[in-house]
Image (cartoon, rainbow, N blue to C red; front, side, top):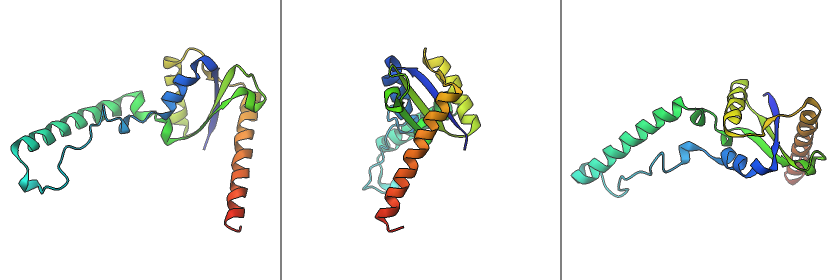
Length: 154
C-alpha cells in the first residue's frame, strides 16, 4: 500500500489529532443510538415507540446520504494505518509534527485535498524527511513483530 508523510507546525497538532481520531459513523450526533426497546418484540411496541423509531431511521438515512457525499464521510483516518510523530523524536525539526499515512492512492489524494481546506501549515514532507519517517515507522513495526514473535515462541 502506498505511504505518504505530511508535516505541519505543532500549533495545529491538536486539531490534526482530533481530525485523525474522528469517525463520523460513530458520532451519535450524526447517527443517533437506537431507540428500540431491547426487551420488546416489534408487535408489542406502542405507537409512540414506533414513531420514535421511524424518526430515528429517517435521520440516520439522511445523515448517511450526506456523509457518503462529503469528504469527511469518505476520508476517515481512523480506518487507515497512520502515525503522528513529534519531529524531535525522529531527529527532525522539533517545531513540527510528522504524519505518516499508509492507504490507497485515492484515499491519500482525498486526504491531501482535505488537509489543504482544513489546515494552514500542513504539506507533504520532502523526499528525505519522508524516507526518514517511513524508515522509523517500519523499524518500529519490525521491533514490535520481533517482540510478539518471542512472546509466542517464534
